[in-house]
Amino acid sequence: MSAVPSHEELASLDEEELIAYAQGWRARASRGDKSAYGVAHALEVELRRRQRTSQLQQLAIKPPEPPRPWWKRWVTGS
Image (cartoon, rainbow, N blue to C red; front, side, top):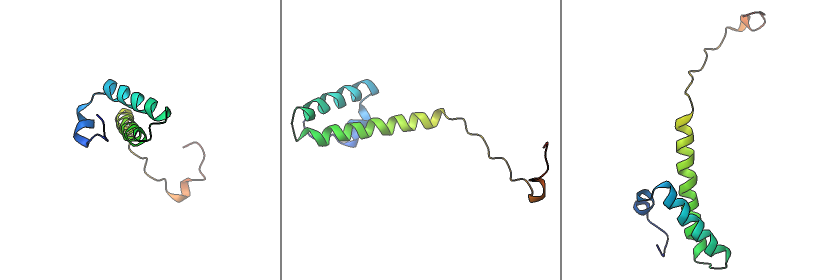
């Protein structure tokens, strides 16, 4: 990958490959390669998107409790 990867290329990478590419491009950018900044950013955005999706799937969906009637707000013990 020498340019900003396409969505298809990003989707074909597994987590470890994506992390390795992102680290490599970020290292190039930190050494002053101005063309590497965009690629490193695109790879890191994809990593964050995947992490966010996997974290959301781990959350247990709890149905909201129905609101209590207004007169029961001051009742203690229930």
